[in-house]
Image (cartoon, rainbow, N blue to C red; front, side, top):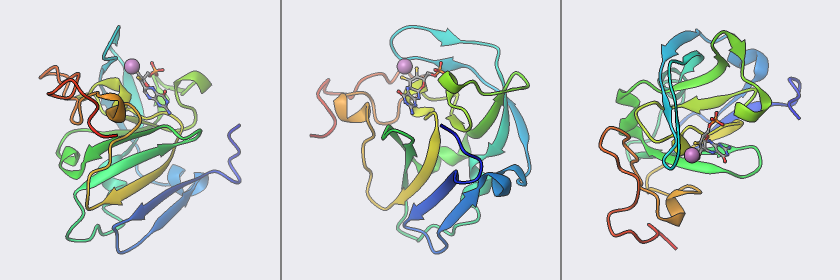
Length: 168
Ligand SMILES: Nc1nc2c(c(=O)[nH]1)N[C@H]1C(S)=C(S)[C@@H](COP(=O)(O)O)O[C@H]1N2
Ligand SMILES: [Mo]
């Protein structure tokens, strides 16, 4: 259950300035609206969405990644993870609190989720609580089961090139 008093978003790892944002801190950041679809790798797409929240880039601008830092892992309530390279920050990625002007529903990530429309939707981590910055890449939950590490939806990067689990 979300509790606005105890909730935080932690940014940690290969950074000079670890950050822990309370719910109030997060609300105080500049908000942006973004249109973007979600493409589940196996089944459906969710089209014509307007998301509202804070640009991921804007949060990471505050933490000073070390020169070696090249990767990130999203950590969610309940242990789900997904990974992206830091160079993904050149594309629009939102830390979203709202979908079509309403707060996210519990099923869809309330209170906070990643929305990375250029990637398959398993990258768009729901119930986000942490962002880990890393020098070495670390596969997330689905990436470990053989899903593609980059998951660029336009290039249809569904599975790892050899069809085998990327790791372990
Ligand atoms: N924390 C968490 N985030 C997650 C998942 C999950 O199981 N746990 N599933 C992913 C997958 S596979 C998809 S398709 C989308 C679904 O988003 P939706 O429920 O808003 O449609 O969430 C992604 N984010
Ligand atoms: Mo999915």
